[in-house]
Amino acid sequence: MRTAVVLGTRPEIIKLAPVIRALEKRKSDFFVLHTGQHYSYNMDRVFFENLRLEAPSINLRVGSGTHAEETGRMMIGIEKVLKAEHATGLLVEGDTNSVLAGALTAAKLHLKVGHVEAGLRSWDRRMPEELNRIVADHLSDLLFSPTSQSKSNLLREGIDPAKVFVTGNTIVDSVNQNLQLATRAGQSSIVARLGSKYMLATVHRQENVDDPERLQGILAGLELAAERTEMPVVYPAHPRSRKVIEERGLGKNLHWVRMTPPVDYLQFLKLEKEAQLILTDSGGVQEEACILRVPCVTMRDSTERPETVQVGANTLAGADPKVIVKKALQMLARERRWKNPFGDGKAAQRIVKAWTTAPFK
Image (cartoon, rainbow, N blue to C red):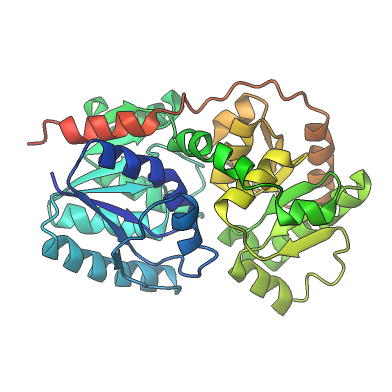
């Protein structure tokens, strides 16, 4: 098996880093193919440096565009690379356009496909991520589910149980491997400037950023929650989100919300760990908050990480400012005694063992 590990975004780099390390340890024949979906230094290369990974030698540099443009450019580039590198299998992680392009291209070339973090469902097909993960799951030869609940989702959709492995989530591996590095890195410069307790926010999902009413409601909710608790909200803004906020003039009345440029993974991990509350629309941040035992408010109407809600680490608030404030106060008062539902930090070992020893026909 010559494996192509395809990634293209910050979350994929973070979650596939333990898998790459496990492949190296097993001396597997593999290479990393970067689609270039995230392409700025702060959203991409810095994460390889933080995680002490060698930068991929192959980068398609597709950049941004419509979903069709991104996916089409990726498929053209991925197909050429897979053929030139004589790949026989491909691993993808998550629910991005890079995942869709990688899985679809490999399947059409009759290569084996493995999907890390398979079986997540928000049950909202308006989300492009939901469509991506459904397609990737049904194209895959091996599906690595983080929990028994995500496995059940796959079985309900008729996927062969023999293809599905419950491995835990590689985000636990990544947090465990990098938390010590983050602590050694010292106090985050952002935290040092605040000099007080704070809340942390991330907002980047298409359904929030591209809807002016929802985005305005979320920003108003963050401002009200901060004012009510007298704790500032640190918001490392994705470049696209910042552009939309500035173009629409939505940041004019923000006094308690401190927008900053994106930060590297170790700084962000430290920001998460020391926050009093995390408010987000990110799936990965929901998981990290749960693992770090920091209460979380998810500013969406649904989540593909229901385990975080079930254990009491997370709650859904949508985009209504009053609901966001109410849920923020509820979560701030919650005891941080929930159990981590995402495994023991050995997911990457299980994934690589199953992938490299599978009796593919």
